[in-house]
Length: 124
Image 1 (tube, rainbow, N blue to C red):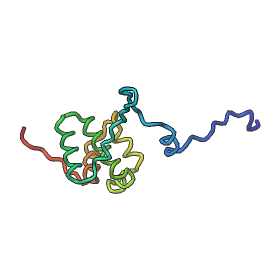
Image 2 (cartoon, rainbow, N blue to C red; image 1 turned 60 degrees about the vertical axis):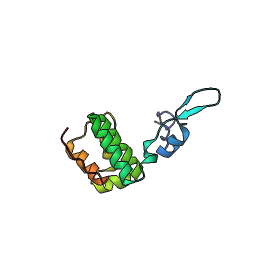
Image 3 (cartoon, one colour; image 1 turned 30 degrees about the vertical axis):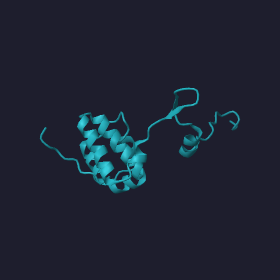
Image 4 (cartoon, rainbow, N blue to C red; image 1 turned 60 degrees about the horizontal axis):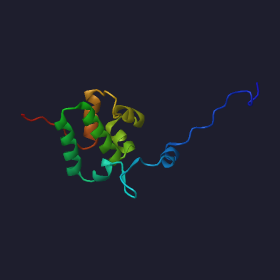
């Protein structure tokens, strides 16, 4: 069988190439006005901002919101660095922090520790 007869799929573009090819989602408000998607990672530049962000996520009582918030902070600090500090593989970290995932408490605690965040409880 020759290479022409085989169904050879082209190489997948790299993550960088895919990100560069996709324009950011925007919403048209009027003739010339546009609103781009909000990126929380841009504003998580201090320990206080990170603590407030995670605390607000915890106050919702929704596990998915906490996981999403941890993912935003990890993205802001660099996924590879957070993965190394937490002892998880980078791919495992991405999977654990995906919005539809259900990570174990151990994973959440390791990620929080790697982010420099301590989760605590208080009386309601």
